Amino acid sequence: MIRLELPYHLRTLAGVGGDITLDAPHGATIGAVVTIIEEAYPTLKGTIRDPATGQRRPFLRFFAGGKDLSHAGMEAALPDEVVSGREVLIVLGAVAGG
Image (cartoon, rainbow, N blue to C red; front, side):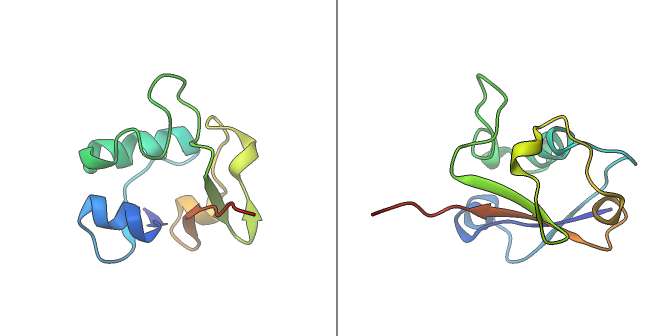
């Protein structure tokens, strides 16, 4: 079971108030988890990854266990701590400006 923490705007779109728990197979990838999220919460389809390219949206980042997983790619396997539910997978909205 994966525990997922979404940024406020995505929680609002999904209609959830806190962390989400999802069933995912051992060795699940970031992309597989995003697919599970999109199936469970259709309003989030296209908000985490671009539907045309399948790549992570530029202003979203993935963190787990204090590490930035964002540049590992959507086919990167999640750490065992995340898949087992011991660590939360955080989807964080990046902030830009000047």
